Length: 284
Image (cartoon, rainbow, N blue to C red; front, side, top):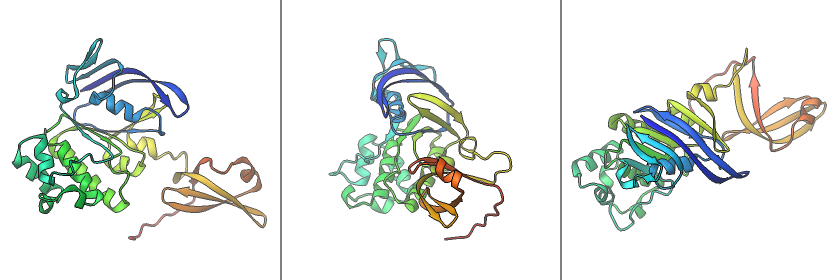
């Protein structure tokens, strides 16, 4: 069990704010921290890792990691941390990067096998692709068999196909090593696929704590679809108006009447709902 009750003053997206989080996380959970940039997600992760100071308390499995006049050093917290920028040693091979953390060659080779990196074990990082580097970083984070695995948007720089591959690797490793995993992510599909719980932050406060289904499937009544997007443009076409909306990686058109067109502003976040809709699925 992870128990956090922390407070810290931050500069958020709207100026100074107070990060105030009271949270319990069960052992072996996979938790996603979500919310707008500047809401305190990464800071919360870094406080748990011991990379930033804060007021309050952090206890893990009954051990105090943070308290009044006490902060356990990062090296003694039993965590693995996967950063966005890989942070690999450029002069060491893939295998040497892993063995630098712990001299356990059997474990290192097992991790490389699980992530399909065995043939690259003697390769230097600068030869690897972004996805391969991220897999090495993930393996390295697990070399000490950490109780807790922390990941700060680890897949944000990768293309969709590679993200899907690494998401499966992350799930496989999470289950095999029995870690408690906490990931910072802005990608709803990634969160839905990986996490069993979503903690949504806004201006340093928890505004929602629920399952991915409860957070992201926000239909009401007879609605069949409800999708969040950004209004890019409103175009008049004869007697109707057409709203151009970006939803994920796609741009769609939605018919609007004059009253609707006048009530929205370009650049707004909007939700597209539909009732009479019969979706079909095909392979692309």
